[in-house]
Amino acid sequence: MSEIEKIPLDQTELLRFITAGSVDDGKSTLIGRMLHDSKSIFEDQLSSITNTTRKRGMEGVDLSLLTDGLQAEREQGITIDVAYRYFATPKRKFIIADTPGHEQYTRNMVTGASTANLAVILIDARKGVLTQSRRHTYLASLVGIPHLVVAVNKMDLVDYSQSIFDEICKDFAVFAEQLDLHHVDFIPMSALKGDMVVERGEYLDWYKGTTLMDLLENISITNDVNRDDFRFPVQWVCRPQTKELHDFRGYMGRIESGSVCVGDAVTVLPSGLNSRIKEIVLYEGNVDDAAAPQSVTLTIEDHLDISRGDVLVKTGDLPLVTKEFDAMLCWLSEQPLDPGRKYLIKHTTRIVKAVVSRIDYRVDVNTMNHEPIQTLKMNDIAHVGIKVQQPLVCDDYQRNRSMGCFIVIDESSNNTVAAGMIGSSVS
Image 1 (cartoon, rainbow, N blue to C red):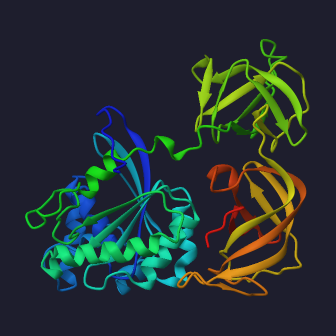
Image 2 (cartoon, helix red, strand yellow; image 1 turned 60 degrees about the vertical axis):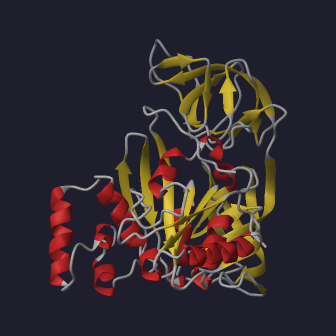
Image 3 (cartoon, rainbow, N blue to C red; image 1 turned 45 degrees about the horizontal axis):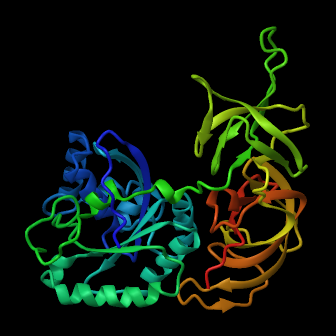
């Protein structure tokens, strides 16, 4: 069943998506084609990449240069960092993350995928489903990306063969059954020639589906945010020092999931104290209700001891409050994990001291096999146990991404050394 739903022309939601795949599958070229054909680049940009293309002795325009901005990338012809690009059409706004293809840049892909609504996995029609295709699909599944598009690229190099496209779709579907993927769309295309990217082109008449751009503009992302569980981590306690607002005490922050109305019964965690919502304050004034991902100021009927890091939830819909939990951890630092050392964990607006109490296994992202390991090195992904000094208010990552993710910080250097997903496990 297709997830595509037509949306009003005046609705300009923001869709974050990533492109991923093996090296030379055409990720950067695809993004360049989308920007070019949707009229989202300036003339001076086009002139610049045209000149660079000519200096390389190539014909036409190398559209991949629109995203491969680092000098090292241009020299090698590969993407080694996450290149972000913004563009918009009359229907929707987009943020694209062009993620690296090499295995040693796994951490870059995890970073780019952490906030994405959709992933485009590119597959070279000549090569079929490769190990790197499986690895990036696994990572997309691990970080809980709701929508997946498999773009079978370079169809012009296989004479736009329907049988080759069908065989790749079949092979990928067998692999995808092992993962927690909600929905997968398959699109044949040629990013170089422009077929089925923004325009349909002339050579894929046998494909009756939508173009990639049409899918991106119309796919529904309304349910990508958890709408059921109200979670409001307090970021700041507002106490204005004025005569008019002398008694005002508001709790400022962003609604991470769910919704809230004036009069709702709420529980403050981890203390467990109860009250009711008195006011919902926006910059424009008071409102009767609000929902994720709005930033608001809430007031409650009772004077309770609430501070930064506390979480307001609806009474009766309580998340996990714990000092110990399991997680999938992606190690980002060149400095390996020291299992006996204390680190800082930043989860929503709370920072606590923590220790990795055990390492259950490392996931081989190429084969998805579980391997025993004593420590974690850069780009390793492992299932671990974590103990914290103060309780965290959290949900399982697969249910609520915003309340199930955290980062690990080296207290001595203040560097982010890992990213984690609470209770998340993909076998």
